[in-house]
Amino acid sequence: MKAELLDIMPEITDRERAEEFSDQLENLLVEVGGIFPRADLRMRAARCIRGLLSPVSRKNGWQLAEYGGDAEPWGQQHLLDRSVWDVDALRDFTRRYVIDGLDDGGRGAGPGGAGVLVVDETGFAKKGRASVGVARQYSGTLGGVFPCQIGVMAAWATGRGQALIDREIYQPREWTEDRARCRAAHVPDTVGFATKPRLAEQMIARTLPNLPEDRVWVAADEVYGRDGAFRVFLEEHHLPYAVNVQANHTVLPRPGWRHAARLVERHAAEDDWVTLPAGPSQLDSRVWQWWVRPIPDPEAETGDGAWARWFIARRRPQTPTGRDYYLAWGPPETTVEELVCVPGARWRVEEAIKLAKSAAGMADYEVRSFHGWYRHITLAQLAAAFLAVQAAAATRDEEPAPAPTASRRSCTPAWTRLPATQGDLADPTSPTGTAAIAFTAYEIARLLWVMAPQPTPAERIRHGLHWSWWRRCHQAVARACHRRRNHAREAEHPTARPPPTGPQTTAGPLISN
Image (cartoon, rainbow, N blue to C red):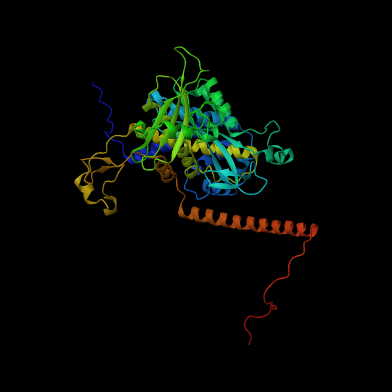
């Protein structure tokens, strides 16, 4: 008897794809379950990751516990504070998961199809003196000098996408020189002051064993590029790079090569600028004008294995006066078209940080301790990495959408029949001339929430009323504690309050008969 072929649907529906995303999330939670030694910790970690991927307005311990169905927030707070599990093992798992999931088979974002390891920092608005690393310091994310925490992040970018793979918290000297303050925030005594480039070197050293050999470039902004020791570290590890430097950076200690801005003004003719794309963007590609020149380095090695140095200037075609400057080091056969892809890939870390903050709640924590910060950030990076990897897989497997039937076309809502815009995928078989784009990371996060089991209306109401009562009781206790502390402080240090100004009235009824 002849066996019949397995009947497989020729196309995959959106529901089947959404169910696949849910299954992949469950598989991920099973894989990381071994990091948490107890069953209750595995359950809480799974609820935490699902909550980080949920549409909760602010993903702190209270709201994550409420979303996960807990009666009180103590379980989620215990996960980030006193529980015993290896956060470094979770960090290493996230790094391997991203590198394997974003593998593009040699069609990367850097020269020769290499991936790009991007380092940058981001700010987390935070007040008070008890939270680890909080100080008035500059943050480009916040747009100035504010009380905040600074986290140094590393992202891996390929042709498939980008995601965060490591993190370190920057602690100013006012913290590391006050050991009593550090001990109150549970900072280990072995942790001392380290600049941002030194923290970046620690992350790069941890990442190197997992990166593909001879297929890695490094990109960083001027905080790291102007640090000579950071560039030497990359060269010692044989990592090619293109890092941003300041306009007054000394290119070479010789006349005519001292300052980057003066070098461009004196030697860059208008015809020397070439217009090249620096990598894809959401709409089309990022097009800049580039001026690239090799740097003579008399101290460099000579021979067939010697690598070359370049000086790169970049400007926008619309505003030629505003320029950025880079120093690059890598194989001499690297072409200009390939070389400019490395500075163009630096924005990838900003996209990865944006995804982790907006879709995975990386900035919504309310922890104060040193280990609590690392635990929350690592869990959020794993949640964001899942979205990035699934979006890359959906893009790789995406096929052109079939033409809708006449009956389906007749019942399509009017608000979905939009005209074609820049960036849409043209589909001549579609009545609107457009087709749906591949699943994005943000859309996958929404579908995970849609596909999750929903409680019945009665359970949802009972659960919401319970949490409303719990929050109001807890806030009443907190208000009483604050008042008791303020009264004790005033009794210990009495201050003369100024007399009230303006007309004074005695207490009495507002309306008299």
